[in-house]
Length: 209
Image: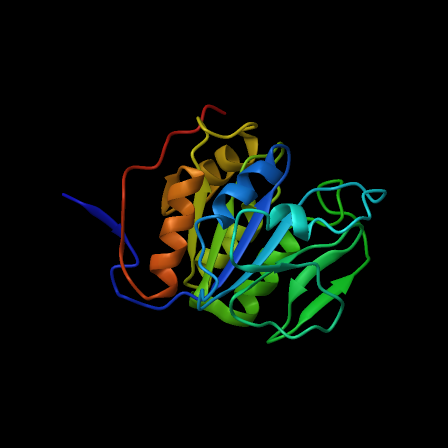
């Protein structure tokens, strides 16, 4: 029997992505699968130090036709755009706009993945797809729980492919993850989900925690 994600045909048009170690390469490859006219908004958090203040969007967007930017506080959310969290601030989605804030570090980092995921779940409910890629620790795990509780979908990079497997493994262990896919298959799945189509998926890879 074929297992499918999104069998009800709901259009999912808010994608939030989190990564840490190894995440730059993974995000570049994932974005390369997305078209310029993607009918969805994309938010991306990759753990980075406060001193890493240069704009990461040109590097992350080098292989995609999608518009990739580092936003300013209050920027409107526009479909067909990927928003990359700047250095030393948490990025959240607040009903049509970007919010950038300071505040305490979460999981020893700022930006962190959980604030973006949780805010997207609150603002957009079942329209959200959360994606956890390579990285150490368990940032993103609680955010994925918020997304699935709100009726959204959760996807993780296959731990066997991830440069550092902890983040996807913790998500699998603690959340009802819909699928664990390779990075290229994640990009392909997002295109289908934005169009309201079902996505055939295999079983979820068991974590080794």
